[in-house]
Image 1: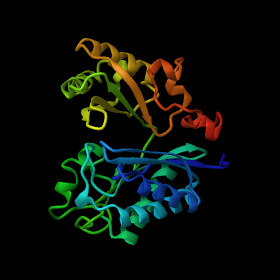
Image 2 (image 1 turned 135 degrees about the horizontal axis):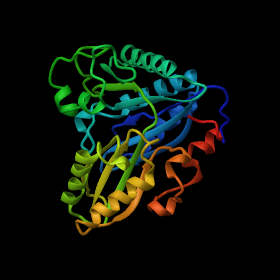
Image 3 (image 1 turned 120 degrees about the horizontal axis):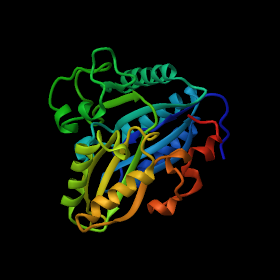
Image 4 (image 1 turned 180 degrees about the vertical axis):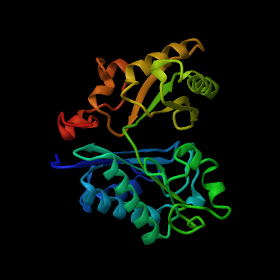
Length: 303
């Protein structure tokens, strides 16, 4: 186990590759060899997307991201990319999260340095989001990537840094700093994607009224590789929406449509507090292992 001392940031780059395992392994290895701690990585063939979780101080994170980006830009061609998940570039979204002995302001400064280096080293247009957004600019990630690669590749852009046109093969990078977020997916026991889409619509309609759904973003999908529907969620206020409450709401709402959860998936790492009093099996957490908990890496002194 890698030892993490002093200040620690979490950086969770999303790459537009989920079908070629060797490419994702090369990206993760590049980050690790550059000095970042690769705590987790995963790939999804239906979303055609991978998520790598890096831990370290600012210097480790910066070195790891630049090394990983070099591999991604060399190996991923957005002109050939197809997948279910919204995407804008080879190194698609890059959030920085302060974890231990690190401040919001330091996370923003690190995000800005990363964006500048990505723009200057790889000729990438870079947009900043959330805490890192420039004054008067859009802050929300869903709005920045609306229309995806296809829209951004067509015309002139107005990025925060970098060229005013998409990179011909690597597209656009969106770099930010934010608080904790949990990427949480629930696989349903039905092939009917309309059920998952209806659950997502209900979440969007009710998240301001129902405490268990506060800050939850959702979309319903059909996963060809599984032949089943999935409810894909981002819990943007995880301190207010522990996983058991979200799972129970989905379970009850799905039952009203004649469906039920088959398993849960958590992309990346979560703090133990996100489980509340529940055990992993209570939310049907597929692929659970202790290393998926931030405390395994950092001990109790997090967030």
